[in-house]
Length: 494
Image (cartoon, rainbow, N blue to C red; front, side, top):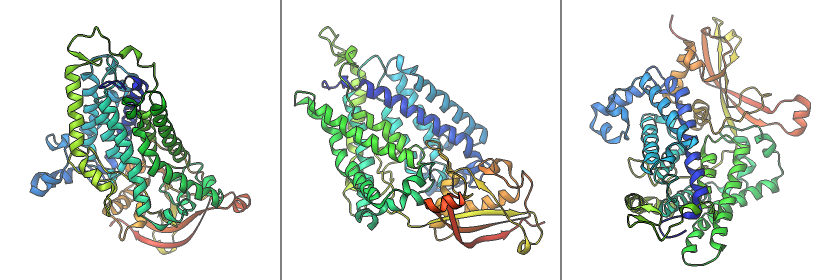
């Protein structure tokens, strides 16, 4: 680092800008494919009802987060236009086109993505109530101030990325230590691979690893989340301590974070959470020489300081001051007795609190949805609807979907954890009875090929991975038992 300019972090900037933009492409594509049947004009939880309440209620106007649909009436067509525009702008940033201009060009592009995606999450209700939504927003906001290829990355913004990774990792570590006993007695990962929301192709193999390995996983997790994040700030010592050691320490800390997140990518489907963490961790990797073209020169005019225009220096320092103020609340939260997880302390979702899996469920309960065309539900032959990601068929290998986010599948995992069924699930069963084409496209397989069933019902099963011996005998990857009625049979009145 060289004062206001983080000259050695040009590679980090390129990865941050392009990586964050690529995940915006994923976020907007996920919304384009799923928002309308879930939250559109005829969705399970219509966003129009939320907006009507916000417009007619004083408390609604206060609670509704910023969204373009506050001033522009929501329609499915406008939602599609917003998503397509977001994908186009994000793809341009991935390619690097806006970065060829002055720094305010990529800034405007990222701010468009930030506000555009916030306009969606603000009306997304429970289907957008995930920590990685606010993580994408905060990362997009910070990426707006990384500048363009014409000047070095601003030191203050690079540091803010370290602070984001610190809150993300250390916050998750503190949640676990304060959470379920399984994280303290080192047994959490003896269950997690099997009971996580959406297992991946290698989750069963990870689950079948020996107990000593799982205990080592937990120890490694605690080390990478509670100890390593402090060393992300080591490159700051380079301002005072000569030599390569501070930069090496920061790079090693980043590499440990990346390695642990890569293991989670291989063994699970956590949307873009792990992918974003990998991208953000690169911010601590400084590579001398790559940004040599941006090194300050003695011949720079007075309106250029450390290779940056004065106006850009003022803008980025203002962002730094803003974050110093906003960070007071998440800093308190990190060390609070009742730590909040995935919480925002302001309407703009900046300087958030993060964390995940403070407790690990010991059993996997799956709600299976079935339908029949028979008139008598008591003597009917029931056929099962298959979801794209969540377990169903006991012989099917779980698929890899991340960083793509299957929102319906994720909420199906949360459903048996609640005390009662949620409104969206009742609406979902009605859509199945109507054979609603948009809803059926969210599923992996419709057993009725687009025809209306006469009855639908929901039953719960306990799922567990088969042992190696069971798999050799049956070729099943899951064992399921303990069937219990959850809802139904229900039918539409005729």
